[in-house]
Image (cartoon, rainbow, N blue to C red):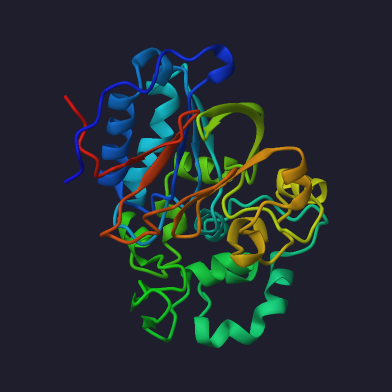
Length: 321
């Protein structure tokens, strides 16, 4: 059990020090999300909380049992907390879910989604890509998401796959249909499809306050689910992400690993916070913030970080009453 902590998150911030809550990958765990939200609401003074910027870092679905309830909770926030600002980033799991229920924006160059299959066709049999009704019109990641992987044990995670390479089985079940069923398209309500359709691939803030080694700094912030590629120009990447270019089979900024771990050099030269989830780790190094302690594991907590204080909060923390 965590130690009880004080019910204040610093004094009321100035306008320049607006509270920013950055919430890591939820992966279908509604109770973890509710507990984390309650802890944030308890920890932060009401005036600051009700005007906070809340950035959700993506991966709302899969692995946990309650994707449908998680989306209901997230969709309810703007009406429940009208003075907050809510940013819902797209994670690689959400991208794939959106692809399967046919709400991804079409490729801007007019190409068919089937063009995205070609680069990875050698993996189709092993990953058991979806071949049911309408598969011809689904982006690669949607077919992988709803597929049935032949190898049942995920050696990297030390657990069984939950239906597909994405562990999407529990998401299907949360909507009352069996994994891999084309019926999911009709089972997902329109408000959930609209939520998935509207997810942003990147979010930028020009002025965010952050406290490092006791010193407050004002920085630009870039939030993206996995990170920015070290070896590519930042402006080029941001343009692609803002355009939500779906002709790309695998978007590195949403699903990369080592290639997106570090802050690109040009952003280190003009101090920029790069904020992500995705990596199954809680990693804070300078202005590189990776907030995904849970990683979709049932026995690991969902985490958030509060700026400017850099306070880490978990769903498992016990707050002072």
